[in-house]
Image (cartoon, rainbow, N blue to C red; front, top):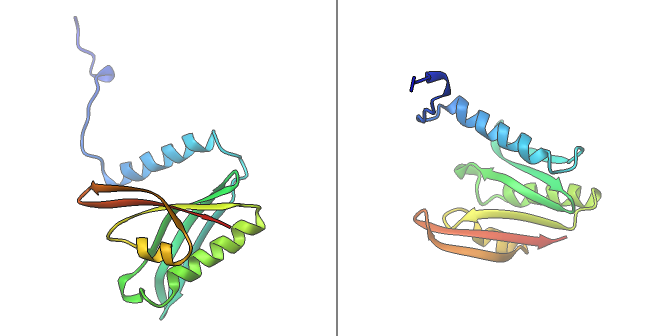
Length: 139
């Protein structure tokens, strides 16, 4: 049987550009199952003339999913994450959202989310050398 390299499967380490492409393809696939006008809540926080942090969140049906929330270490403890989440919550309410959903690792910010009124709905221990937490807040 002749071997056709065009139809062969090759698996190799992904480049950074390919990782971004995979993420883009997944988002496009997911978007086919979500409303076309799905609002995005992408915000940045600047302090001392630089990017201190940011949040990326999407409204799907009545739930806002926080995909990313990050504050640079030197700016932590100054209320930036709280302010970003508060702004997303405010915008979410304007769009009729009822819940905010997010997840975090044990070394990230589970204590912050509890403090901000999020309910921990699931925890997976001993995963990736830490714990993984899923939080939900009714707004």
